[in-house]
Every structure is written in structure tokens, then in C-alpha cells.
Length: 355
Image (cartoon, rainbow, N blue to C red):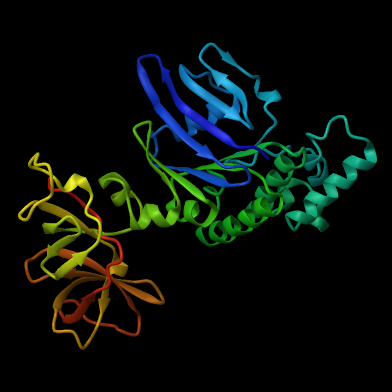
């Protein structure tokens, strides 16, 4: 395992810049994720790290060793990186055991067989060594691909959209299994995905990408509760923006009441040195910031509802006509058009300059 550092990395195809000034540090033994929509540059970043693409500026370091810089790159086969692909890339004519042992060159037969058995036990496929890939389910094939990547004891594992071919239920379960496997092996890993649920369930650190740049590199918790900008706030989780007015540098007033917390400097739309009263902002409210409370005198009208089993996601129309979201236990089954009592439970005030 090894620390991964990208320092101001840029890469272009012709005149089109794909990634620009990409910088982050993934600690040794941690699981990181590049999260973003299609075309944001996350797969290109993975290819640069793996040694499949050269970089035009900056530096990539793995375990303290330079892997890429402008005009030079360590060959991919010398980087000691394990790869797990979206389509698994298993050899159909080889057994599960032979697929896992494919990268174990230079080992004695006994050592090779022991490592194969160890990896298959690790991924829960100890009884499938003699089977072929087509005899396995999609989830089992993905675990074989992970075992094959881990078998040579790489310094770093890279995974490109590893669960996108699987159904939702299997994807969620397998992502937890893969995290457990990586942690047991103490392997540094970087995953690329467009699925935030996958990113949050797997990763210790997540980088939200947009137009070739990392908008925020942070823990999943902070990305959700303390997004750095509007793009992160919109891309991660659900929420609604309501108008607010700055009272002072730690209070914002919205129509539902006064919120206490740190107000980002971005609230300053007028160019003044400090945020003053009447400075207008947009305040992010998450569905878990608004609690259904029958005893509350503050009312909102249900405009839409989505049943999610244990919960309803209600779209609420506030007295001013603004909209907000609220997650409510599903035994509170209210009709569209009905008014319900609500109260605020905001721990993190997130405000953006009014557009």
C-alpha cells in the first residue's frame, strides 16, 4: 500500500483540456473516490495514474516515488497498480483460480497456490476455484476481478465504475463487501464513479469533479453537510435553496426562522468588506433539516410525495411559495394539498451568494 499524490496535474486531447490543475492526497491505506458526471475527466485522471496516459503538467507520486511528470512516465507495468474494470475483464478460458493467479509471476507453485486460496477465501469464493467466469453471477465475477487485482500485493488499487453493470440491490451490498475486503488488506484504493451512494458507502475521501477540476476533496460527511460551492451542493444529496438575509457573520434569517452558524464569505454579493444585514443569500436546506412536527404552528403544504418504504420524501410549499424537501417516516401518510406542521433542525448553515 502507498500514499497517492496528484500535484497540479493537467492533461489535454488536442486543444481540449480534460483535467486541469488536479490536486489531492490519498493517505496510505485509505479508500478514495473521484465522483462526477460523465465527461468530467475522472476516468482520464485514472488513466493518468495507472500510466496509460501522459500528463502535460504537474506530478503524480505513488508511495513517495514519482510516477509521472511532463515528458516522462514510469511504465504502467512497473507501477505495481492493480486494476478492476467495469466489465471485469476476466479470461473466459481460465478457471477462477487461474484468473486470480494470472499476475503471480515469479512465485513458486506452492506460494502461488497458497496466495490464490487466500484471495478466494478473502472474497468469499473459496469453493469456486475450479469454475469458469460464465458459471458465476455478476457479483461473483466482480469479486474474482478484485481478488486478481489484490493477489500480487499492489501498492495501489484503481477501480473504474466497478459496479455499474450490477442491479441496485447487489451494487449496494457488494460495495460494502468490497470496502471490508480492501480494509482487511489495508490497501490504498481509488475508485471512479458517477453514483454518489456508491462513493459514500465505499470511500473515506471523495473528490467531486466538474469540467476537469476537483470542486471539493473531503469526507462524505462534509461534502453533504458543508459543500464548498453550488455545484457540490446540487450534485451531492438532495436539497432546496431558499432565500435568506444575513443578520451578522454567524446568523441568517429565512422565512422559517433564524439559522445560527458560519456564513461563508461567498454571501458577500455587494463587494463590501463584511457581511452586513440585507446581504441576500441562497440557503441550502436538506430533507433532514426539516422535521415533521404535528405540534408546530409553522405550516407547509404538501405539493408532492415520493414513497420510499420507511420514509416519504415530501416536497413542501412554504407560505412564500418557495419549496423545500422533508424526509418523514412513512406512517405519516399525508395527502397532497394537506398542510402539515414542520420545524427546523439545521446543524450546518450553508449559504451561497444570491444569483
